Image (tube, rainbow, N blue to C red; front, side, top):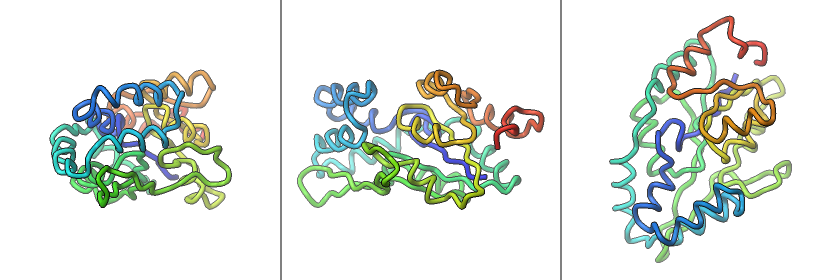
Length: 220
């Protein structure tokens, strides 16, 4: 069993990319944010455009803002503990960035793998360096291609649980055996009839995992 867990809006209560943009370049970034949410612009293009709005010289301010404003959704540590007891592998797979993902995860747990992006600050503007690009099976446009990560982890006998909240998680959810979803992802998986449970906190996820009679175990 491999659990693929999103960060922004899932482990972290806020979407940190959107929060950063609304703090530092709100007027310029908001149309791009809305285009991404509505599917009018790919995640990859939208995120690249947003970060180019930020001067590299402001990175320390951006990192400090992210650190001060990241709130972890309750129950995450308990969830990691339960997965460890079951022998399930957990990967945090995020379209976010190392400067705000790594400090949070390393402070809470070392029992997970992390896939996320980084910024190149050598030029005058922040440039995105994508950690995992779309493979030949994906139609493209992902910020960090979560289905590509899943395919790289699949040995032909692997079941996947995906945990997420938004459009960036939908492709991964379509490849999963089971999904824990909130916000817009919940609407999307219900429309497609993908096996899923809603969650608000990771205690909700943990309750379903520990319930041996849960419908989750019909799919994994």
